[in-house]
Amino acid sequence: MKKIINAVDLVEEQMVEGLRKAYPQYVRRLDGTTVLVRAEKKEGKVALISGGGSGHEPAHAGYVGKGMLDGAVAGAVFTSPTPDQVYEAIKAVATDAGVLLIIKNYTGDVMNFEMAADMARDEGIKVDQVVVNDDVAVEDSLYTAGRRGVAGTVFVHKITGAKAETGASLEEVKAVAEKVIANVRTMSMAIRPCTVPAAGKPGFELGDDEMEIGIGIHGEPGTHREPLRPADEIVDMMLDRILADIDYSGREVAVMINGCGATPLMELFIVNNRVHDVLEQKGIKVYKSLVGEYMTSLEMEGFSISLLRLDDELKELLDAPADTPAFKEI
Amino acid sequence: MTDNAKVVEILHAMKEAISENAQFLTDLDAPIGDNDHGINMDRGFKKVEADLPGIAAKDIGAILKKVGMDLVSTVGGSSGPLYGTAFMKAGAKTAGKMEIGMDDFLVMMDEAIGGVQMRGKAVQGEKTMLDAMIPARDAMRAAAAEGKDTRAVLDAGVAAAEAGVEYTKGIIATKGRASYLGERSIGHQDPGATSFTVLLKAIAAAY
Image (cartoon, rainbow over all chains, first blue to last red; front, side, top):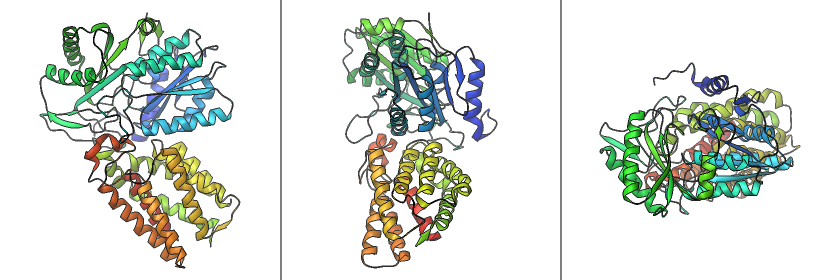
């Protein structure tokens, strides 16, 4: 294992501190926790909290700030934060308007956030939750834990955050979050795995001429493995899966090409180039594109494509101002 | 009967067993999970070990409740809430007791299983820790009903748990992260069922 770290068990702590020191104008840390909240608490609005394992930077703390999240909770690398940490975040950001937890659909995340929500409700705090499940690689059936929550979660942060900023009620904010979840789909692939520092070796092995299709964001194996093909063919195959899942025809979409951590921007733009061409051929209008690292998996080399179906409300909220370390909309 | 000092000794043995098997459990997690089960369990039981001196004189319920809280707050993932809930539920049934017998232990197992089912929304046969816990509990209850001594009852539980781990190799995961692999999860034993078996073996060996 070759990494620029000091010690395996200091990775999360030193990452959170470094992030805090980089952005004191945006975030402050709750003492004794891995929770980062807005530097200045905003009263009178629904507070949004998200989080998950570390290793997804800039998610989630990079999205704490005006127009997006109020708090982010970081667990160990690729491991859900624990209920006590989430509970501290809820207590710190809670307003009279309530708190909405944005959870990615992983079994551990859901369990830990639900335990924290139970604890907060016992204290009389108004808490509700949404679970993001945008990954089309996984079948949503009785026989799985349901689709995973992956990069599309960033759209939920942006749009739900904009809605909360308007002073909307918890019910209204939750409804918008669920609308985004219902309309966003993501598909991912990788050509090189990543190594969890504490594990010391990659979660799976890939040959030089192989790619893993349908990966999640935790370095876990995907749904299947194929010989590597040219970028355009990979994009076509991934878009086929997304476009077959919900009807995008004649709709406007927001596109996110997300790098998994070690993918050159050059390659992400090559992907984006093809995505736009294919969508144009199919009569799907791209309203907005995001290309970059939004939800990474350590040094995994690969990318995901997310497509969000838009209507007037979602477009307006997507365009609303946001000022956070990792996402700015002017 | 087993008193609170013995419970602390057994918890220490459980910590040692998890520590010894940490790499093994993590390696089991790599092909069907996310490569960290042993790491996370080891972190949790190290915290338990560190807190044992401060709670050793308390009643068994209080000790187990603290163990549960430690696991919930340090293990993370899904194992943290699941094992944490299991210990907390077991602790709730032994509140105030300074010693327990096999009847108590079987009730604790019932509570632990109920807690895991509630928190994990899972049933037997989904390739989870329940596939070791439930057969182990059933075998122990049957052995106890036959009037066997504690040693024989625990041995029966360990044997059933080990058989449960073997059983998980042949089935598809439908809960947790391994469920995303579908048929690719066949052939791999469940890390959670395995860690439960490691813990039960530690209890049996330390008893």
